Length: 372
Image (tube, rainbow, N blue to C red):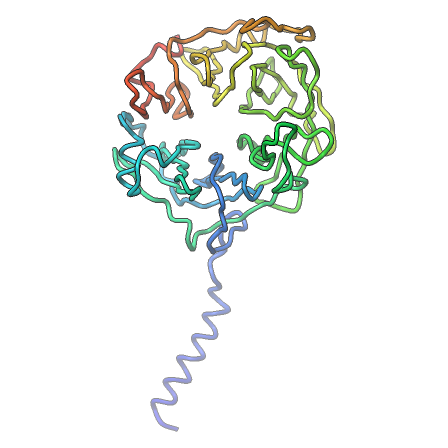
């Protein structure tokens, strides 16, 4: 036998041994490598270890993408004036041809991620580096996906002719190993809260929700949560949710189980003619607060101590224009806040249309009055 043939045979043998001895690296959270078919990016939320959940209302699915952005870093101030103009320049379009649909802060790296949609509906995911925008590739990435059971059909419409599929996902969150999804289903009681184990399995626990909507003067089961957070109130974990026109409602987390119908406790009516846009829980100087951005009101702040003291529930109509009732809250003199997210316990990042028309992204360590 020729020497070259022997060498080739030995190399081939080692290759076979290596294939069995050193198999491909197992990916975290049962992810796989590929290109997710994301049709829209309407909601963002971070899970563990740099995993970014992407809510895609158009396909009624949630994608988990490994950003590999899991290195801890110090908080950096953000102050980007005219962010829409700068984004448009980066993407080769005009500011009136794009929308920032959501922002999310990676709790590990403190890096801000943006969900941007162009005028033709193309979704774009970017992160912020200083004042630069870095495209986040969604090609050949580690990901997994879950399609939401019983989501509204693509052609389903409400009584006013508005498409229902867009409300299949209204907000996302993550806590205690579970992805939380609020939105609508195609069931009779369509307002739905889903709790989905992560890593994803075939399990999808979802509960239908009912609230007393004081501004409407009735109980409702078809209005989706617009934005939510979770927090401990008097030693018990709650989903804290806000709806259009603008009730604030508590749902005990331990009651939101598969197949249940849960009636929430309405603790505040914060005024009709308004839609909540974002809701986060914050802490400062030993006090805890809810901070809410609104479509037609200033930013609201609610002290958790007031929530804990309020033991009742609103069950009577509060129908006068802009009337409020229930838990006290403070209107912070800051308007046209479109998005916000938590950077750390006492610092937020805020997307705001300023009075001069400029769309700015900034962090609140520059203004400590929000949590006083």
